[in-house]
Length: 140
Image (cartoon, rainbow, N blue to C red; front, side, top):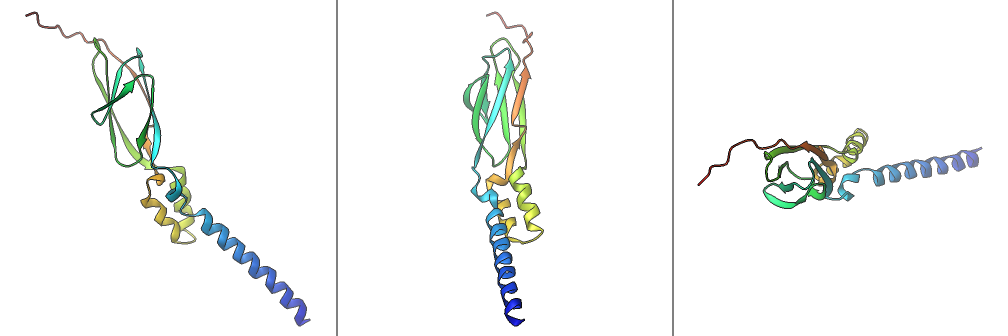
């Protein structure tokens, strides 16, 4: 009988070791995610200049890689139309949510929340309809 109980213990220990190793491998996933994400900007009419935090990055329609850290100010301008501004904020990404859930079992996943991969810009797509600029231009 003792031999049978010992053979049963070995698989339980191995199984427990596999479960712990598997869990530790999947926690803190945000640390391995990228620090940038795509931001898409569309306008009607297309061909408007896009500035992100004051830096010109292209014309609409635009897909541009932006940092996941901090908030962004997006400025869209086109001659003959009013300039429009939009802001993004950060929210917890799906990997960040996995880290939070993993932290319920082990504290290690909480380290992932300091990584940029735990966050994402919200919204990740900005669509604007530009309004014509009706301000009269001064005649010299």
